[in-house]
Amino acid sequence: MLKAGLATDEPMMSGNTFGAVAKQAHLPVLLVLMLALAACQPVRDDPAPPDPLVAEGERLFFEETFDGNGRTCGTCHRAEENFTLTPAFIATLPPDDPLFVAETNPDLGQGFESPRLMRELALIVENLDGFEDLGERFTLRGIPHTLGLRTSVAAASGPRLGWSGDGAPGDGSLRSFATGAVIQHFTKTTARIPGVDFRLPTAAELDALEAFQLSLGRQEELGLPLPLRSFVASRGQEIFLDPTLGKCNACHFNAGANVDPSIFGVSNDNRNFNTGVENLPDQPADLTGELVPPDNGFGRPDGNGEFNTPSLVEAADTGPFFHNNSVETIEGAVAFYNGAAFNESPAGQLLISATGSGIELDATQIVEVAAFLRVINALENIREGVAQLEIALEPQRFGERRAARALTRAVHEAEDGRIGLAGGGLVPVAVSYVDEAYGLARQAQALESEDSERQRLVREAMAELESARNELVEEST
Image 1 (tube, helix red, strand yellow):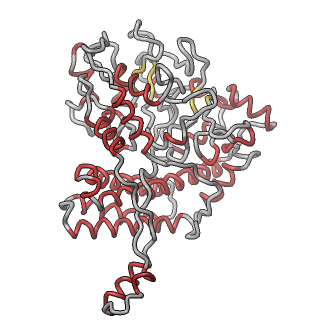
Image 2 (cartoon, helix red, strand yellow):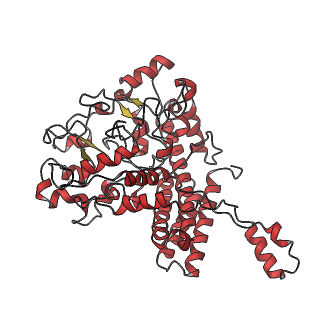
Image 3 (cartoon, one colour):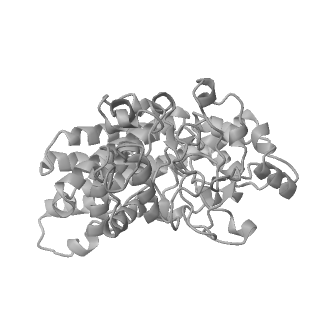
């Protein structure tokens, strides 16, 4: 199961159609021509009106420290980094960033984080089995993004959150997940005394945080197959969907986080599997010589070795991959399923018993599946980027702060789309359009929100992203 990242927060904006307006015969010819030109632009739905609960959740997510050590939810789930963290991004942070509180607060110097592994591999300490033995009983995990949660946390047996699917205390819900995060990561000391080391979120705050997180990313699943223009990505999609070849769709239905209902008999079911990631040899964290206890996965205190299935739509730009950040590239993550660690695992054996064979892809096929994942991720980058640019166009409606944040997110979505496609040598024309959108959005950032030039730049960036999308999929979709 891969570590996944991206998509749209809100629907797109609509414009006036020319036909209804052009009937006004008294309009000047120039204005009629201008309206005709506008009619050529894609028709959009208006962005959803600002939801006060979501807006409050966004404020809490990025600004509220809960009277703790200075961290917020956004300390580890960075909006500009697809709501996760990578070693490269961590390297850009100043020494006084709250992420490094274990290095600056003596009361958190032991048992709170492993600073070297956090800086070098973006691994965070988690005490899923309790806080009684901080020196020995812990796990080290990457930071899962919070995109597309609406499509990925439902399971027949209850909510699935965190890498092992049991990351929320209490009732296991997304609301409880926030409570657990405050206790685990926001505390001033390792005593973790509520009211002293932090304050617990109120019920209203939990409601708001839940609403904000559910608003992030895709609000519905893809419908595969997509009419992809890239012959490499298109072949990767075929392999992905082929139950005798890639076999990926069984556990990542429509490239999401849920299992194939035709195989498992239930829809919208996010499951756990033991895929053998913990058995990979020469894992980066182990090579450092730091203490890295085995991660027993789902269940407390003695887990069953299972980890939660993440969505693959957001995977390509949210590496490193797997719960322990053990693989850096999307190609390497696809290749994992060819190896002994997977094929000898309980999940691999289940697959072999069901289909008669394990996954056996050659190098070109691995690259093709990865190309498919890169392209669908780029499509989500584009969709998210356009949605954020729509918000940036309306600071009066959404507020200056949210409009500015949306423009920043759009810049990073364009950058991710460009890097993801170029990293696989895919669709150079689309890369050039996304690159142009990135430059335009960056220029817009330097201007005031009410500046007409900024509005022009934002609209042009949106048009470039639409052009990129049309190079990736057939226009009829």
